[in-house]
Figure (cartoon, rainbow, N blue to C red):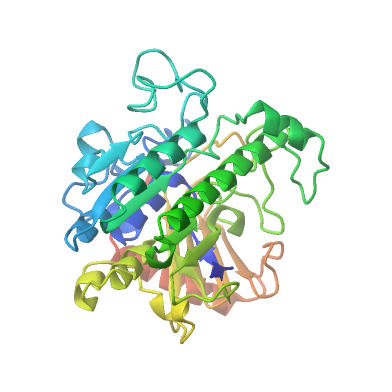
Length: 404
């Protein structure tokens, strides 16, 4: 099933990953920026709040919940939720390969970074070979885990570092895409090569499941932790057309992500769902699919199980969606990211910018690209969404930017 309105819990990586692991709003967790984030510019109106730089060990993670149901668990690839004491092996994972506090590798080619220091991809530099590509290596490690645990119930969290910067693709693929015409703003051959490698390696995982006769008993979820990074690389890495801007920003280009879910004997091939779902919904959804009691799968989470959508039997009913980013981020873009909060109620979307107190209002039904601000034309609608946003920020204990 393909979801056309899937959202990341945040427009940058670490908060979304925390939401996937816990089923909670990043604002409630106080993990609201990529770790460790950036300092506020000297000319900004606000100081940053004292936010969390790691996923607290007290939080029950998806891996811990699934272990209670008898699953063997593995985290392979990017983690980015705190230092060594907060690595996956301390958060319910039986196996951690390449997961640490870094958000991206210094290099996508072995040994993946400097010979020594904290910026290496953990555990991979010690064994490898010249020319080895990180996406391939992580896939190989995932295939080993699947083969080893083919007779067990397993949870594999395979989080490729690609397609995060630095933009580095395999030479043959880069050359192939350099000779293809770009379309819809997509003209970066290196980025295309990186996506090609991820796509190809996901295919290897699916093929292995078929070879081991596990495909008809394995749930597969494919998604991203934020929108495409439009300001990296020359030419720009990607375009999110028709969505506005990309990673880091409050607009749909920063928040909407791909989502494909396959549940054997449940999801119909080629099916499409237009109901909005968010990263924190994976926690209750996967626990319900794994057989957890409904009370257990919903305990202390903000997410809602969307199993009914996967079955094609119902909708989730009316639901308000919120985001909160009390931070600054340069993001290598011409338009710096400043603190904001977002509310989406039905098809109306409000964006509040704290730096200048401005609020923008869009009707996503008519204006998916968010080009026509209706705040002045629809003052009652703007106030209604603004009030709902205020109530939510208070309810979850959101940390606010601190005036200088």
